[in-house]
Length: 158
Image 1 (cartoon, one colour):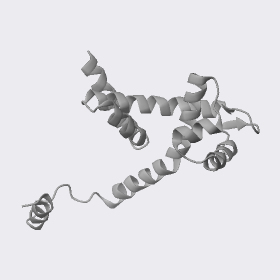
Image 2 (tube, helix red, strand yellow):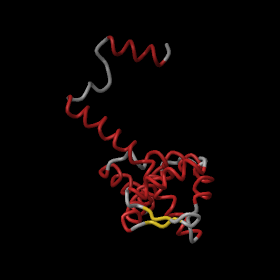
Image 3 (cartoon, one colour):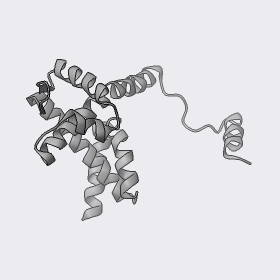
Protein backbone atom coordinates (compact mmCIF):
# COMPACT_ATOMS: atom_id res chain seq x y z
CA UNK A 1 0.00 0.00 0.00
CA UNK A 2 1.43 3.41 -0.94
CA UNK A 3 2.00 6.16 1.63
CA UNK A 4 -0.89 8.12 0.12
CA UNK A 5 -3.23 5.12 0.41
CA UNK A 6 -2.14 4.47 4.00
CA UNK A 7 -2.80 8.09 4.93
CA UNK A 8 -6.24 8.00 3.26
CA UNK A 9 -7.09 4.74 5.06
CA UNK A 10 -5.90 6.04 8.44
CA UNK A 11 -7.86 9.26 7.94
CA UNK A 12 -11.04 7.40 7.03
CA UNK A 13 -10.71 5.33 10.23
CA UNK A 14 -10.37 8.35 12.50
CA UNK A 15 -6.59 8.01 12.81
CA UNK A 16 -5.67 11.31 11.25
CA UNK A 17 -2.55 13.11 12.36
CA UNK A 18 -2.99 16.47 14.00
CA UNK A 19 -6.52 17.82 13.93
CA UNK A 20 -7.12 21.26 12.51
CA UNK A 21 -6.03 23.89 15.01
CA UNK A 22 -8.52 26.42 16.37
CA UNK A 23 -9.48 29.08 13.80
CA UNK A 24 -7.52 31.88 15.49
CA UNK A 25 -4.34 29.81 15.66
CA UNK A 26 -4.75 28.64 12.07
CA UNK A 27 -5.21 32.22 10.87
CA UNK A 28 -2.12 33.30 12.85
CA UNK A 29 -0.06 30.55 11.19
CA UNK A 30 -0.94 31.79 7.71
CA UNK A 31 -0.50 35.43 8.72
CA UNK A 32 3.00 34.64 9.99
CA UNK A 33 3.93 32.88 6.75
CA UNK A 34 2.58 35.77 4.64
CA UNK A 35 4.64 38.25 6.66
CA UNK A 36 7.77 36.12 6.27
CA UNK A 37 7.24 35.97 2.50
CA UNK A 38 6.83 39.74 2.35
CA UNK A 39 10.05 40.45 4.23
CA UNK A 40 12.35 37.63 3.17
CA UNK A 41 13.48 39.17 -0.12
CA UNK A 42 14.21 42.50 1.57
CA UNK A 43 16.16 40.71 4.31
CA UNK A 44 18.09 38.65 1.74
CA UNK A 45 19.17 41.75 -0.16
CA UNK A 46 20.16 43.63 2.99
CA UNK A 47 22.04 40.61 4.33
CA UNK A 48 23.91 40.18 1.04
CA UNK A 49 24.80 43.88 0.88
CA UNK A 50 26.17 43.64 4.42
CA UNK A 51 28.15 40.50 3.55
CA UNK A 52 29.62 42.11 0.42
CA UNK A 53 30.66 45.20 2.35
CA UNK A 54 32.22 43.06 5.11
CA UNK A 55 34.08 40.70 2.75
CA UNK A 56 34.84 42.92 -0.24
CA UNK A 57 34.72 46.42 1.18
CA UNK A 58 31.85 47.41 -1.10
CA UNK A 59 28.51 46.26 -2.45
CA UNK A 60 27.86 46.89 -6.12
CA UNK A 61 24.62 46.20 -7.97
CA UNK A 62 26.46 43.98 -10.46
CA UNK A 63 27.80 41.79 -7.64
CA UNK A 64 24.33 41.49 -6.12
CA UNK A 65 22.84 40.53 -9.50
CA UNK A 66 25.50 37.86 -10.01
CA UNK A 67 25.18 36.36 -6.53
CA UNK A 68 21.37 36.35 -6.59
CA UNK A 69 21.18 35.19 -10.21
CA UNK A 70 18.87 38.04 -11.21
CA UNK A 71 19.10 40.84 -13.74
CA UNK A 72 20.64 44.23 -13.00
CA UNK A 73 17.19 45.74 -13.63
CA UNK A 74 15.73 43.57 -10.87
CA UNK A 75 18.48 44.67 -8.49
CA UNK A 76 17.96 48.34 -9.43
CA UNK A 77 14.26 48.03 -8.68
CA UNK A 78 14.97 46.46 -5.28
CA UNK A 79 17.62 49.06 -4.46
CA UNK A 80 15.04 51.80 -5.04
CA UNK A 81 12.67 49.97 -2.69
CA UNK A 82 15.37 49.51 -0.03
CA UNK A 83 16.23 53.18 -0.37
CA UNK A 84 12.55 54.15 0.12
CA UNK A 85 12.43 51.92 3.21
CA UNK A 86 15.49 53.69 4.63
CA UNK A 87 17.67 50.58 4.60
CA UNK A 88 20.31 51.61 2.04
CA UNK A 89 21.79 54.72 0.54
CA UNK A 90 23.15 54.83 -2.95
CA UNK A 91 24.40 57.14 -5.64
CA UNK A 92 24.35 56.45 -9.37
CA UNK A 93 27.31 54.31 -10.46
CA UNK A 94 28.55 54.00 -6.86
CA UNK A 95 28.58 51.32 -4.20
CA UNK A 96 25.66 50.75 -1.84
CA UNK A 97 25.77 51.53 1.84
CA UNK A 98 23.54 50.29 4.63
CA UNK A 99 21.86 52.79 6.91
CA UNK A 100 21.89 52.07 10.65
CA UNK A 101 18.49 50.40 10.26
CA UNK A 102 19.77 48.40 7.29
CA UNK A 103 22.87 47.36 9.21
CA UNK A 104 20.74 46.19 12.15
CA UNK A 105 18.51 44.17 9.79
CA UNK A 106 21.55 42.64 8.08
CA UNK A 107 23.09 41.61 11.41
CA UNK A 108 19.83 40.08 12.65
CA UNK A 109 19.29 38.24 9.39
CA UNK A 110 22.89 36.96 9.34
CA UNK A 111 22.61 35.75 12.95
CA UNK A 112 19.35 33.90 12.22
CA UNK A 113 20.90 32.40 9.11
CA UNK A 114 23.93 31.17 11.06
CA UNK A 115 21.82 29.54 13.77
CA UNK A 116 19.78 27.62 11.19
CA UNK A 117 22.88 26.71 9.16
CA UNK A 118 24.76 25.37 12.20
CA UNK A 119 21.66 23.50 13.38
CA UNK A 120 21.27 21.75 10.02
CA UNK A 121 24.96 20.84 10.00
CA UNK A 122 24.63 19.47 13.56
CA UNK A 123 21.81 17.24 12.31
CA UNK A 124 24.20 15.84 9.71
CA UNK A 125 22.92 17.70 6.65
CA UNK A 126 25.77 18.16 4.17
CA UNK A 127 27.14 21.70 3.83
CA UNK A 128 25.79 22.42 0.36
CA UNK A 129 22.25 21.32 1.23
CA UNK A 130 22.40 23.04 4.63
CA UNK A 131 23.34 26.34 2.97
CA UNK A 132 20.46 26.10 0.51
CA UNK A 133 17.92 25.08 3.15
CA UNK A 134 19.07 27.68 5.68
CA UNK A 135 18.55 30.42 3.10
CA UNK A 136 14.83 29.81 3.08
CA UNK A 137 14.26 28.57 6.61
CA UNK A 138 15.80 31.54 8.41
CA UNK A 139 12.80 33.69 7.50
CA UNK A 140 10.16 31.22 8.64
CA UNK A 141 11.46 30.17 12.05
CA UNK A 142 10.10 31.70 15.23
CA UNK A 143 12.42 33.17 17.85
CA UNK A 144 11.42 30.30 20.16
CA UNK A 145 12.39 27.65 17.61
CA UNK A 146 15.57 29.54 16.77
CA UNK A 147 16.59 29.56 20.45
CA UNK A 148 15.98 25.80 20.70
CA UNK A 149 18.03 25.23 17.53
CA UNK A 150 20.85 27.26 19.03
CA UNK A 151 20.76 25.33 22.33
CA UNK A 152 20.73 22.02 20.45
CA UNK A 153 23.74 23.05 18.39
CA UNK A 154 25.65 24.30 21.43
CA UNK A 155 24.93 21.06 23.32
CA UNK A 156 26.20 19.01 20.38
CA UNK A 157 29.45 21.00 20.37
CA UNK A 158 30.06 20.44 24.10
